[in-house]
Amino acid sequence: MSASAVAEPGHPETVLVVDDNDDNLALARHTLEDEGYKVVLATSGQAGLDTFAARRPDCVVLDIRMPGMDGFSVCERIRKLPGGADVPILFLTALRDVDTFDHAQRAGGDDFLTKPVRPAELVVRVTTALQLRRLRSELHGHYELLKRQRDDLMRLGLQKERLMAFVVHDLKNPVNSMDLHAQLVLRDPALPEDARQSVAQIRTEARQLNRMILNLLDISKADEGRLTAERSDVDLAGLHAEVAAELEANARARAVTLQARLEATSLRADVDLLRRALTNLVENAVRHAPAGTSVTVSSARVDGGTEIHVSDAGPGVAPDMRDTIFEPFVQLSGADLPPTRAGRGLGLAFCKLAVEAHGGRLWVGDASPGARFSVRIPDEGAR
Image (cartoon, rainbow, N blue to C red; front, side, top):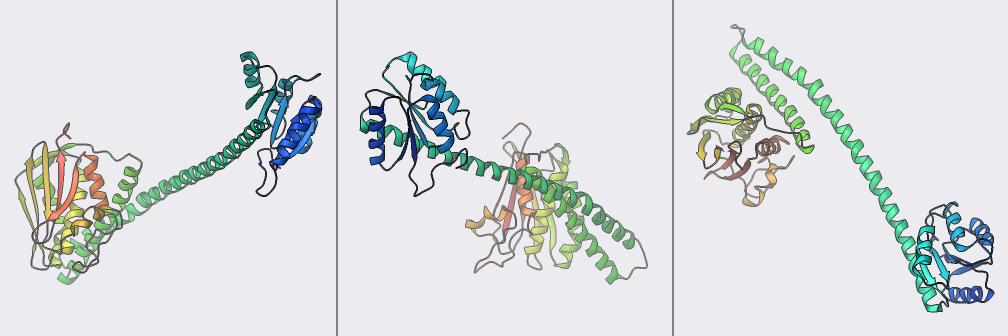
């Protein structure tokens, strides 16, 4: 049996009784054996130590007053032996006083019985001590399991950080290079119109891929509590113009018109987070808007902040799915919805985190017809 082992299921637990009185030994032996315990006896402190080292009992019942080595000394030495740190030790004594009790506690005893010991009380105390030992052993096992799980999670987190570094640093540069070369090709006045449209689409897709890379990085930051909004003055009209220019080719290919109705034209926000959030929302709306319809970006001042709305005339989002749609990699389905009414993996999830980094809120409602995604950015200092 190992140093911290307990008796295996189906095997009787062993109790070592150490006492220099033969009548006490006999009583303890018969009482405990009748309850199914295996009992070993020792008539002195040294004999008790030798027997403990040889038998590794599950519990020790130890008389305090013995010639030579008393029970306190035996207990202290047992605690230093292999397997002795966690074995329950019950002291027997005819001395019922506070000083003896305190000494027993300091020596490492788990329980304290006064003589003459009633058989029923002895059984209850031994049984309780062994149950507590099993509980400690189980809790130790749970602790070790939790520790392993914590270590695995920590290792997984470090691997995720390394993956994020790879995604951002090793993929961002070639994607930006694709966009740059597409811009250079578009400057060629002799480029045929059909080729120009294809290159423009390459540039649109490259910029979308770059947004996905940055979204992945920011979602990882949010998981670690490191995504924060660095506010500055934002020209909302200019920001919308940048977003519309980026998505114009995509919208034109789908015969969708981009519109703006901006009553509020300025606010203080993190310009990069807000630009990417608005781009994701407009791109999502364009993807679901029917041909010949419009995607409209509107804004207005509200009490304590600014609201921005992105509306399309697509199939809309069912009320019971309006929270789920912002979870990563969610796609909605239903009898009245196409299976793709959702963000492409992380777009809408990023939007929610970007808005929440400002202390704001993102939700979806009806555009009558279609979906209306709404962003509320509170003023600085307001919540």
